[in-house]
Length: 286
Image (tube, rainbow, N blue to C red; front, top):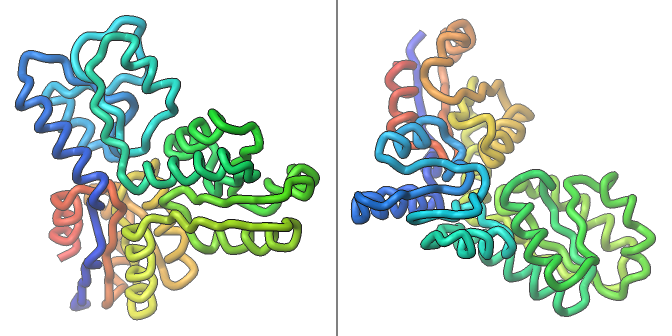
């Protein structure tokens, strides 16, 4: 069957990820004799992590007591306590927190300082949310993380007792997660301030992919299964048309039948998916 293949405009590296990867590589090339470490995976993509390792940029999962060289804070951000620990260990700190994530951290701090009961909409275990939560908790204990109305109901009494409620959102979350929470909070709070901090790149990527899905027999989402924005994309699109989520072109072999029977195929990719990975997927389908 002849194929009509479309690639989404907003597919692949977003600004924050591109900046983090390019800066990490530049740091190593400009400091060949220094150790360059990244605390946690710089981005959720195995191919990129392997490439960085080959350049001598090592991933560490915790801060040692004593450090030597440069330690990079990744685009997801970190808690003030961890940033302080990196400095105390003796590392030269390079903070590559995405500017959009920084804005959420600042907004959460601002709300906490102004005595709002702070609700962070997102997944509690996600590194970005861990950092936002830790920043807000420096100023107030009235901070909760929730990704559903059900999770928030445990705090209903405390929320009702508080005069003001403020909401911030994990940058890669979905509007369909935020909206019911806002509706619920409106019904139980006296004063509600909502900062829709879903980043523009995520919003545009989701919006464009939804439009493509409406005219496609098959949507292919390319990117890591560990990437929140990529898995959210796949979740959204599954409700519109047949959708598969793959990490790279090697997984296409598992879907030969569905690809073979689809005439209109559209491809999108998460914010941490490199261009060359997307290109290999297109080539293999062709």
